[in-house]
Amino acid sequence: MIEIALISPAVLAIICLLLGRHTRAIEAISVAGAGSLLVSGSYLAFRTFDEGAIDEGIWFMDQFSGLMMFIIVLIGFLAVVYSVPYMRQEMATGEVGKRKVSYYYGFLFLFMLTMVMVVVSDNLGMVWIAVEATTLVSAFLVGFHNKATSLEATWKYLIICSIGISLALLGTIFVYASSLPVLGEGSDLHWTSLMAVAGQLDPAFLKIGFVLVLIGYGTKAGLAPMHTWLPDAHSQSPSPVSALLSGVLLNCAMYAVLRYHILLTHSPLGGGFSSGMLLLFGMLSLGVAAAFIITQKDYKRLLAYSSIEHIGIIAIGFGFGGFWGVFGGLLHMLNHSLTKALLFFGAGNVLQKYGTKNISEVRGVGRTMPFTAALLLLGALAITGSPPFSIFISEIMVLAAGIGQGSFLPVIIYSGILVVVFAAFMGHVVRMIFGEPPPGIEKGEISRSGLLPMVALAAAIMIMGLYIPGLLGDALKELIGLFGGME
Image (cartoon, rainbow, N blue to C red):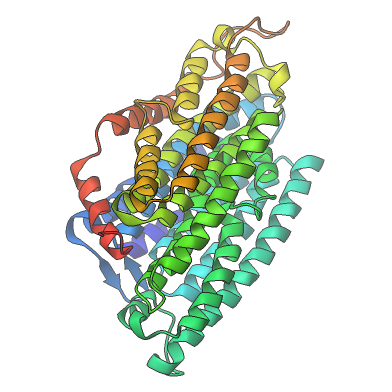
């Protein structure tokens, strides 16, 4: 069954690339294919939630992989659905041609394929290959518009993330070296094999390996100070791609880091070392993001820095550890994906209506596009941690974990920065939504069909703020033991 989740996006990518200028056929096949991928991926995810791990040799899924798989296929499906009206508008304005649209959908499915490979690979070497593949495939999507700014962002993305992934490879080698005294030179890099002997791994090699992995994959996750590629790449990409980069790709990179964190938690080192490193980089990311959110002038870059903030919150949750830290960190990965996808879809509508990413030039969205404005305002309140939305719940869990661990200084800093981010972020959004629209901006939504995935996401984050489905909650609770967070 795991093979189906890998083969499907590969086949869909080939079909889209071969169809060339047959745009309508590509759109229909893409939506149907993404829907089938959502069904098969969700089946695998909920199977792990209900029955536990699925081990198929080189492919392995536990509840953690299941959570990530669900995020990938859900946001991927909604991004494809939103892409249909978005790309039609791009063609109508002459931004792209029909042939380029086929490339867009083809690489979109290849991007989803590489992210699925990250979360279903048992071999840590294969995880490294898959993370590197996400960079190579998504680079085309970052530079899709072929403008000077997008090409600059693409090269920056490739260079910085390639340096990061090189460090991650070196870290993987050190972790392999830690297993040689136990498993011998013929040992493999399967995560399940390493977990079986975690208590016997060499602590010195593990420590060096984790530092390199955290910096390496942390570069791809957008942790500060390795984050510098992220605002450029996310702001220059087409909005559906920005939703995948921010809501899914960053989580995949963090997933890779956390697999090593789990390994260290069960090793002779215990969880203290890796937790401390995660807390340090999480707090740094939170502070850097807040500073740039306050002074931001581009609303897509604003959302990108918000992603850095929330990756920081996820790292802080696992850094605090314990029941609430791990539960909150896992839940925040899902909550952030849902909310950030909503905001990037809304930003796409605003960009196509106003033709600018400059915050100061966007006014009166509430009058020109009332439905988009309402959903944007809802998303802004949610992403800044306002109740009763889902992010509020996971942020409070992380706060409770810090208090429970007695980490009062980090808790105070964490709380203070969240207040600053709320004020700064909402200040930008409110100025965009209210006021008098600039001359020449006609009233009316860019596309009503493009609102459908936004409404679905808005409903999800409201429901998740009030109720966590039992099967998901139980799966997350089982995962807490894997992270050593039951104490």
